[in-house]
Image (cartoon, rainbow, N blue to C red; front, side, top):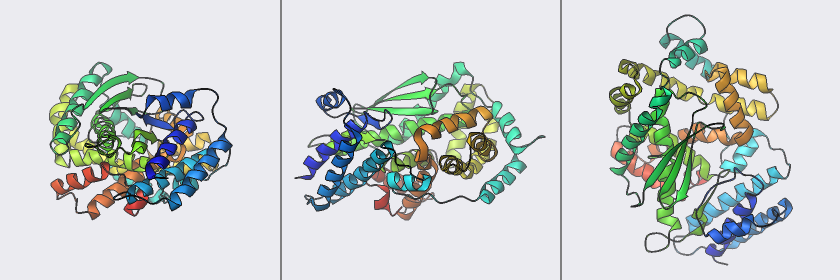
Length: 410
């Protein structure tokens, strides 16, 4: 069989697996008839899907790639390995946090010592004025930069417009490039990009939890430009579309969420914020545009940039809370308390984050560890902070390629 035949079977398998897990198929824009067929009748039994995954993996071991198709075979094998592992988990096998992360995302997450978090809290203790614990002072200060609900759309639209313009200076986006913003509630996540195909996305913002001004640009760049929207659009343009624009590789018409692709997708979406808004440029844009739009004091922008730097370390607390909780070493109240102490979340925010962990489990590593690994790889290719043009080039090369973590030496 050709790789294209194996790839077609892979797409059908992912669609069938999606019947057992509604979160599994993050995006699909292949033939509508395939989706219709997958949704007809009763879901295929998990043992049958596991046998199909094993058949495809065995076949790919001996498949001979055509010219320039070695990376395609590696991509399919990596993705299929994760599909097989997820099916095994759905069938009832219990994975440890570390084993699950490795099986799904091709990385084994290192343990971050609590001493690292305590050091970051000590530095924040010196930044945050007033009485009370660091967590209390952080939450009080953060309440002062919450974007009023009636101004959220204006702030977010301005942020995504600027992120889009900066991305367009470096990336050739589809002529059909388009997005729509929706505001939703009762979700386990703060924002989500639903890629529709054809260069179009729906970006949803969850209004259940207040949006602080320092998150507006993060969400705009992460979900939109140069994050998820651009990642999906470039992969579709270069690989899913048929010749002459693309290669007609049908496996890129579907995105299984619990797969190695997600570490690249989330890691580049987080790192892309820094690529598009390096250093003082972010502070200047937030100070001169976003803070005034939100009706907040622009002089606070520089202070929150310093706080954000410490939060990069504390972001890894999500992994430790998830590891302890999913492996049974922390109960729910203990995990929420851990998140409140080391990620400075309020009780409501900690409960919401644990709700995310209940749903997406070890996926949390893709944000913090993914960003760290992507930054390291871009730096190794010469895309260091003092070489912004090279950084853009290397970053765009990564998000428009079928590379998975294993191919990057992660």
